[in-house]
Amino acid sequence: MSAVWRTLQHYVLWPARRWRRGPEARSLCRNPRFASFLAQNNRRALDTDFHDAVLRGRRWVRRALVALLAAAGAWIALESARALTVF
Image: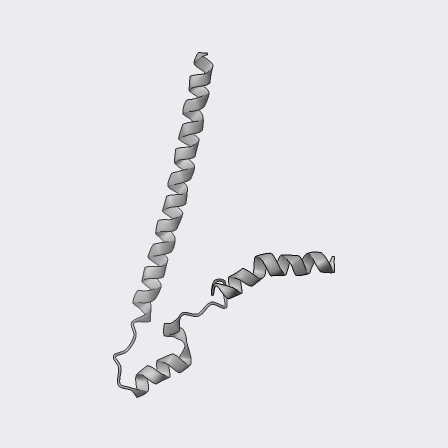
């Protein structure tokens, strides 16, 4: 069981950390050291709400595309079934 768990961690859980995905992912704008550096150097404040809105929009578009592909696949299957009933 231990070898299975290690393999699962290596192939499934590790890429999520390597590609900065998952619950522990933090963008550069949310890094406290980076934010304090910008504040000390008189940079304008970062609009993290806009960044979060962009991420939500991308997530919505991705889900819409998946739903569209699923609907297209179902339509193709339905039309294929209708065509096969003719023969």
